Structures are given as structure tokens and as C-alpha cells.
Image (cartoon, rainbow, N blue to C red; front, top):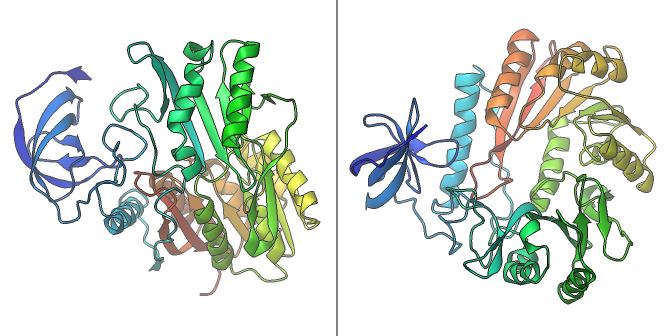
Amino acid sequence: MKHRLCEPETGTVAALNSDGEGVVREGKTAFVAGALPGESISFQRYAQHKGYDEARLLEILEASPERVTPGCAHFGLCGGCALQHLDHEAQLRNKDQELRDALERLGHVTPEAWLAPLRGPVWGYRRRARLGARYVTAKGRSLVGFRERTSSYVADINRCEVLAPKVGQMLPALSQMVSELSIRMRMPQIEVAVADNQTALVLRTLLPLTEADRQVLAAFEQQHDVRIYLQAGSPHKLETLDGLDEPLWYELPDFDIRLQFRPSDFIQVNGEMNRLLIARVVELLELDAGSRVLDLFCGLGNFTLPLARRAASVVGIEGEESLVQRARDNATANQLENVRFHAANLAGEEAAAECQRLAGPAGSYTHILIDPPRTGARDVLPTVAKLAPRRLVYVSCHPGSLARDLDILVREHGFVLKAAGIVDMFPHTNHVESVAVLDGPGVQS
């Protein structure tokens, strides 16, 4: 990459890229943050790559009718959101089109039907986040928040409209608290985990705390009704100030499930959308009392336990041992005896064989759910095909890996793509969550 500030130029924005930036294709392609499709703009290229340039927006000459006033005063500086300037309905249309394009161009597949977007809260939805913390000598205080959009620096913000309100309004207090610590220069991040029963803050500490530091943190806990955890080493080795560790939990009332988790565990960012997504997955699977379900990448049982309420039996497989134990404990706490969990690496050369060993022979399952990380589930697809379920639902957080995997399932293994659609898990960001449902080979429509 080369950095060279070019002369201003004008152009028309053709589309948005996967990062939510406007794409100008007149001459060498330029990506312009803050520009929207259809707008006439002036812009200035500042970073040159082989196939495109990065550019800054100078002026909007003709605005898109879908442009709106951002709901956050810090939009544009803060990198937590990319699309607040785009009407929310237009955001959904854009993400829907991104999914369609990915399936068509990358996966060469088209579903028989498109699902309507699954909708939820647009503001104050984020219950899980990793915030940067940085003491700035020139300002005489610590900054706490997301990184700036165009740099690695922590953005100077005093509130966040997408974080759970209690945390979004707490940023100035967090900044003051960190500023008072003796190790303020050696505390790079604060993780947020908002449960139904309490709000947890995990402070990454690179030096030991003094007794005075602990008093500052204890006072903050009491004043703001939060639970502070200290992470000095491994992400999974957390300690509280008083040595007590009450479990965090969230409930899924539609299934009479309560799931306990640790502050460092993966949970879906958007709690309300998570509940809606679980209900949609159960609906799409079309379970009955005799259904036998395999849940791959099951985590701490977020989908597995609700499925166990509707099916004869469920097996969950997950790569992280600590999450598997959490899932087993959650099954016991919810008095579910028709569910089992196994730990196995679901990525890499040995993934298919290990998954096959734990899952069992063909015909063991009538239904399969896959909910992988961004890299997708390619390595376990041969096993999925051998198991020959009558229905498969795939929950994805990346359209590209979803398209690749659907291509494999449809073209190599004979599955039929029945439906697909987006899930509005991350409003105002460029992240696209989606769900696809397939029938197994030989299943009669």
C-alpha cells in the first residue's frame, strides 16, 4: 500500500462494499467512507492499493434520498458503526442484496424462496463488546470506547447508542475510573458482558493492582451496580475483587431455558435477536417428537437446549472444552436428559473424521444445525453429507463462507436449498448475519 494525497475529484457512488464504504468506479475504483449509493460526491484519494484506492469524502454534491441524520453524535469518528447515515430499511435492503449476490456469484446457488428479514431492536441492542482503553497524556485522562474508524486509536466519545443503555451511558464514568488507577497506562481493554441478572466488566490488566486501585474499582462496582472481573493472563482466568463469582445468565422464555455463561464466553451480541433467531431456526427445522438433531459448533448450548425441548434427542459438538462443560452444566440445570455434548475440533484435516466418530453412522440424525464462525464449516461438510439428514439449517455470520459451503452441499452432495434470508443481528454495522435451510438428498418437497 502506498500513501499519496491526490487532487480532489468528483464521481458517483455505485454501491457499498462489504465494509459499508461507498464505491466509485469512475477510473480506478475508490472506496469512500461515508458515501452512499447514487450520491454525487467530491473525494480525495489518500491510500493506493493494487486494485483500489482508499479515499476521504470531501463534499456531498447530491445526497441520496436514503441518507439520514446519524443517531449518534460520534458517528464517523467512532469505528463501532458503519451505516448510521443510511436509513435502516435501506440497510436491510443492502444486506439482503449482499447475501443474494454472494450466493449467486460465489456459491452459484439460488434458494427456492427468500425469507423476510428477521427484525429486532435497532438501538441499545449490543450486550457484548470489547472496548479499548488508552490513557492520553495530552488530554490528562483515559479514553474508553471503540477504535476510531480510520486508525487504531481509541475514539474520544462520551456515549454509545448501540451498546446496552446502562453501558453506553457509562463511558465517561469508565474513563474517569481508569484515569484514577496507578496502572492506567497498562490497561488496554475492557470487555462488556450484559446478562439478564447483572452487567460484567472484564478489565485487562498488564500490571498488578495496588490496594488503592482495588478500592477505586470496588467503589465503582457499588456506585454503578456492575461486577468487575480482572484478567491478568489467560482470557478464561478471571478473578473478582472479592473472590466471589456469581454466575451470569440469560433466559429464553419461549423454551423455559436459562443459560449460564462466563464473561469471556461467546454469546450472541444481540439478546433479543438471539431469541427471535432461535425461534426461527426451530420453525425452519420442522421438528417433531421423533426428531434426532445434531448441533455443530454448539457453544454453551444456545440452540441445543431449546432444540431439546422440541426433539426426541439432541447431540451438540463444539471445539472449545470450556464451552462444552458449560453446555453440560446448563443441560443439567435445565433438567434436560435427552441431550449430550462432545468436544471436538471442527476445523482442519482431522475434523471430518473426528466429527464422524462422535456423530455416528448415516441415519443417526433426522436434522442438523450448523452455526460456525466466520470461516464457515467446510471441513465437516463431508460428514454432514454422510449423515444424510432430511433437513439442515445453516446459521452464518459471513455471506462469503456461507455461499462457498452451500455450493459444496448443493453441487457436491445433492442438498436442495429451500430458503435463505438475513437476520438483523448487527444494525448500523456492515456485518451480515443470515440463515439458510436445505433439504437432504432424496427428500420429497
